[in-house]
Length: 499
Image 1 (tube, one colour):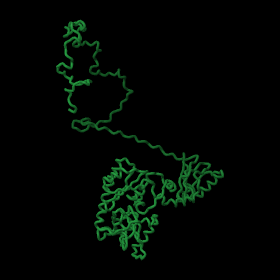
Image 2 (image 1 turned 60 degrees about the vertical axis):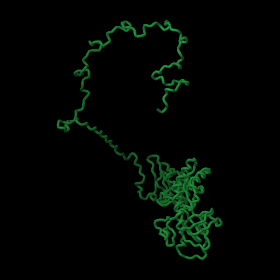
Image 3 (image 1 turned 90 degrees about the vertical axis):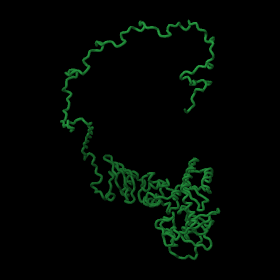
Image 4 (image 1 turned 135 degrees about the vertical axis):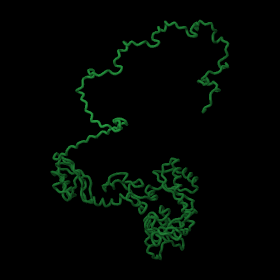
């Protein structure tokens, strides 16, 4: 509940950074307002009966009335009425007449205050509040799972439990209207508390969660920024910032609010420079506007001469107005040259000299990459003693001094001196000297000497005294215990599935 610089009170709770228990660093509560009247220790006879109370380290702040004969100090933990028979525990962040100024800033009418501060919080109340804060993280995870299972297009950002554990407020962001009637039923069934759904914007979500910005400091929306103005990319263009969505977006996914901080200064300074000067024409080329540097007071142009390379040159605003007036009259200067006041660090004689064709750089010599030698296997190139033999470099071959291949007196390889295959006196293979198949005196096979089927004296098939096939008591052949397409076939021999 406190930052590292807070003092410790009598009950072990942080007492604040100052002598009177207030926190001036912003570490204890978000969006803190420095209560300078409390630090002065001046008794105010016409003290106001209003107080500002913050909940969950400043994530939510509300105004309450003080009861009769009640006096509190900034930083006190108090018990407040919630209006539904329950109570909540918060910290007093502002007291006295400064509360009215804060209400005026937030446009909060005094007649909207309907709840009172009941009493100071005792150790039991503080223990219940810490118990409620401990349940919020696990409840947020479960709530996100339930909303995802229901397929709702919403994002849950934070959960806040009431100190008496009777009510839980779920803060979510969504692009449109969400029907969460079924969602609330499941939340009530899961968490056993009264559920309230509250929709907030993406910037309010970042303010509740907090974080560190790209500047290295805590987010502005978590420390002091309360009113959010619209930000567009025009603010970045006025300040000559590259349009990079990832760099211009904050943790909320929107454009950074700090783009508006210096926008008024840039607009005021840009009025001192000439307008409608995107292009300046000369006889030798055209200059195109690149950017306006209000800190150096210089306008940068990209000059493209008719002969030579393009040049980025700085020009003073008066010089730009003079060339623009000439172009409006139909006159064009011979050339556009940067003045010494616009670029004082460069000498006039050394500024923008065209050296095309005058200086030639030598050609770079490409180095040939050396091929990596493959390691020799063991045993090759070594002498009898196992050491590698030193051999001189092999002389290169000269293919032009060699005779043709058929005229070279080389001994024939093994097997090349044999005659052709048909002239070889090889004995025939086994079986090659036998006569043709129809001239062989082979006995007929078993069953080949029986007469044809139509000459056999057999009765017709329908006159044979044989029982039907399904009534014959014949053992099944091997492989015939399978059912092949017959719907009435028996499944006796079919093994059960899964064996």
